[in-house]
Structures are given as C-alpha cells and as structure tokens.
Amino acid sequence: MDRFQNTRQPDWDWWGRLWPAPGATLRRIGITPETTLAEVPCGNGYFALPAARITDPNPVYALDLDESLLDELARLAERQRVENVVPIHGDARELARNLPESVDTVLIANTFHGIDDRNGVVEQAFESLAPDGRLVVVNWRALPRETTTVDGEPRGPPTDLRMTPEETEAAVVDAADFTPGDPVELPPYHYALAFER
Image (cartoon, rainbow, N blue to C red; front, side, top):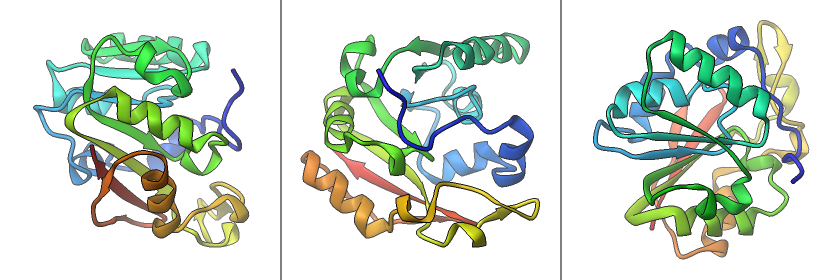
C-alpha cells in the first residue's frame, strides 16, 4: 500500500495558519450534527476532531495508512475528550471494506491531486456511501505554487499536480455515478466540490 503522491502531514501550527477555523470550514461544506463521516486520509485529525464535535454522537471514521498519525489522533482525541472518532488503519483504495457501515459523507481533503488511482478511490467512496450520501473533495486551487504562501513560504502541491474544479468534477463523474454540485470557495487557496450519490 503506497502513499498518494505529494501527501505528507504538515505540522499542526501550519494547518492553523491555513485553516484557522476548521469547524466553520466543515459547516460550510455541509457537515451537520446528523452526519456520519469518513475522512480519508485523516492524518492526525485536524479535520476529523472538529468534525466529530459537530457530528457527536455520530461517528467520524478517520482512515489513514500511517499508524503513527493515527496514534497521534487517538492521543489528541483522548486529551480533548472527543469520544466519537474511530481511527482506522487502512487504504482509501479499500475504503468500503475498511468501514464498519455506510456513511453519509466521505471527505477527501488536500489529497485528491496526489491520488494515482482516482477511479478506484472514487468508486470506493461511492460504495461506502449511504443512499443520497455525498463525496466532498477539498482541493488546492490551480494556482502557481509560488503564489500560495503560508507565512511567506510557498505551500501546497507542485503546480503541475493542481486541479481546477472542472478537472476535479470530470475525474469524479467519470469514475462513478455521482451528481456534482456547485463549487464552494474556501479562501485563500482552496475550493470544495460536493457530489451526491
């Protein structure tokens, strides 16, 4: 099981400068108290933990290949008294098999650009969703990397890996029978697309 291209976990402070209010971002992309969610990959929980606060008591299944990040997520969840995060060591390319139940939303944040087998991951997301469920993709805007700075340093994936909303939409709908919605702008450097099953 290989990692996706150009995906590694930034430190928590870096995330905080880029996403100062992750809970507000999650609400903007449609995460509600009624939601059951799977985040793939989840890293150390920068989105999974605030998502769990929103969905409590519904579960947030946090899947990642990196066991050390999942261990960190578990420690943070315990420290923050978040009890409805369920860390899962597994591969997004086998998501349906790794989840104990269908979910309302599958969230792929900041990694779609680096997935080699996009068709396989999208198909797995489709299979993992309850009827009328949603796949939400949060992606870096297709801007030159040198223009997407955090603390004065270029950040994000290489320019040639970045995808426009149209490219992201095409990749998802070509892989599975999803219905796309309108893009949601997530300043300064991201957008989100939601796809209904």
